[in-house]
Image 1 (cartoon, rainbow, N blue to C red):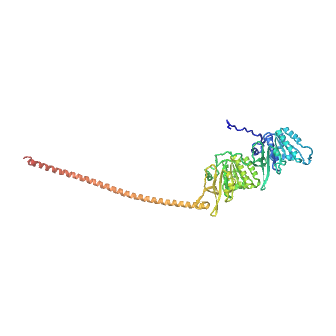
Image 2 (tube, helix red, strand yellow; image 1 turned 45 degrees about the vertical axis):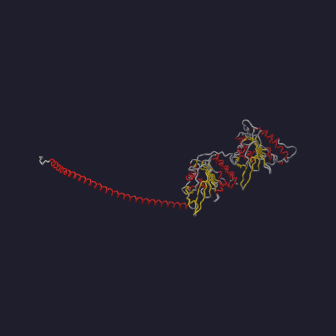
Image 3 (cartoon, rainbow, N blue to C red; image 1 turned 90 degrees about the vertical axis):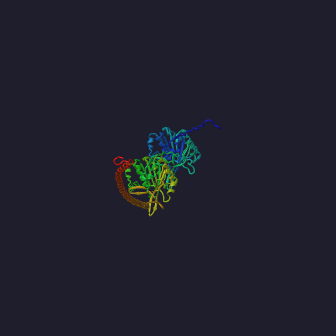
Length: 589
């Protein structure tokens, strides 16, 4: 069958949602919990069910102007107020301003005696009065087990649970109901998760003596949601759910470049350093100079007027500042001007997620342009490989979204630098610089090279990395018959090359002098020949002049002789005439 015309996509009507105000949870649920429907929050003891429900109410009242009712069956109003005060919530003030109603219902299981029918009609009346008194939009019931603890009849419990959830829906309030986790089911009764429109499972587990809380949205009717398990933290400002990654790779990028503080290293990166907002990995074994490069990077950024946040997991701030004095770096003025801030803790102080939450908090408070984590591998022992990779991914996503340039240092084992880095986090980085030790001739020297730098031309050469009291420098490494030469071998090779160059220069100078001597000798010979030539030419001119004079004289003399011979000719001619005519000498016949 052929369809005529253009088929328009179906119109999508999103499910109304109530934002929780809990960081990360609204992102996972796509906007919050289902509005006007019940949500079940279940988990074991100590996983944070009551605190999550209480923050849902407090954030609703303070951020979204939605009053709420908290009906508790285990903790009194005073106990709840004290507990949530540790998160910075003023529950007492909200109750006084009629933003929240706290109703403690005391139920003692031992006082229950089953006889006849059991229903929750009295609870509905009490809850309805509390809702109407402040026109509540949100309701929290904490917890269901206390409400049904004295009942043995499962059929009655199931029937009343259905009635409770239906009543909340009919009332049109957004409800959060907490429940203890069962052994083989999400809840003890195994029914709550089926009648709830949204189910959130909390878990508090211990791995390698490190406790971590996790959250998972098991079910969400009518809406897409994150289905993975997400770590979450309980801090002094409430809960914080940490999504594994951002929902899409849509970070902003910058074409601006920032210098590293080491001129020759910048030259290896096209002369301008790294892209702003990029993530940089600096790997190397112990003692190769990772912290020194990181400190130069921090100083260069602070001198540009940018704020730098330095997380250290091995050295105290005072120790880093003192050590940098040995290479001429002065970090104290930058700390005093609040351009450089240190945050130093032991890796074993918290679990992996608590470290991440602490970083997020420090970054949010300081708003840095550059973040340095030295070394990130210290945190690897706080969790499994997948957890560490997830933690680094979340951190990189968070920093890239804010266009913060991040430098990670990574401590590697000798001979396994590439394998260890590649297996953990190198693929997440935009640039990767590798520091290595070269051992030979009884000494150990450092070399540096750029393994990768996305989006920029970079050098593929190995350079020697020098550390002295004048600072750091990157110099060209010499290539000898046995490979790269560093340290004294490089100095010896440099001396040999300088000596060879000097010998060549001396040989060239000697040859130049010899050529100059021969040129001068040739000039002298040419001068002598020219002098001889000029003398002979002068003699030739003199002789020519003498010949000319003689020729003239001879001509003159010949002319004179000719004249004399001409007179004699005339006399002879006259005599011959006379003889021919018979005349005598006096003219008579």
